[in-house]
Image (cartoon, rainbow, N blue to C red; front, top):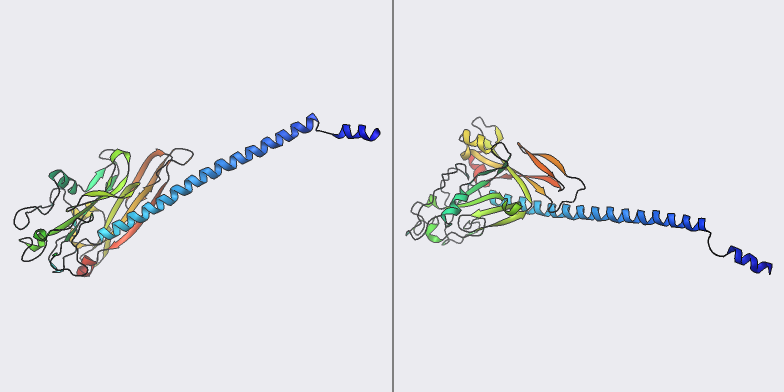
Length: 299
């Protein structure tokens, strides 16, 4: 009988023990919730960073490929004054041989966008998103040789009548120019690196590219090498001396993944860019491009 009474007294938990167990359980649950929230936030950031890296890779590769064709003189080594256009109203659009079409196949409204070189942000004092029109002379489709350039950045192919073919192309072969217009579109609140071709259409190359800046490398008369922005190149009439390009892009995350909104300042080459407060991630990427069709001419 004594043994049974002892067993009954030791069975179950006291009220104090139960309360202690509940408190410990609450601490454990709270810790697990914090770990879950932290892990979820870290995973979201990691996902966005991966997407940003991919956008930057695609954007820089596209810029390098398109810009490297600047100044291409065709297989005939025709004269081309400059590898880029600087003036907003000076892109010629002559008739092709036969007069059935013009060199730039786009509509008049599309030609206007080809003429656009920079875009202001927030008025005349805001930082600019640079843009550039790359120029090359189109080869003849009648001469299928390796290394020919017959298409713009949108794979729009030059017709024979608009090419540099001596017999069936432009009346002045050096007029057979292809234009590729690199710029950032902000339509519908997005940020996309786009290219518009003089023979093709326009489409995004990479998403979430917030800003883009260029500097142009020139060889001065004394042999010195210097990078300048478009305004300085224009002021010094040096577009014909450009042999290389530096490009910088500011990439943003698609989603807002930071805990707090904050304004940010970035330096892209010679331009200081201020970003309004938000919860997005931002990163700067740069590349340098030698223009093989111009560098050897100037050396």
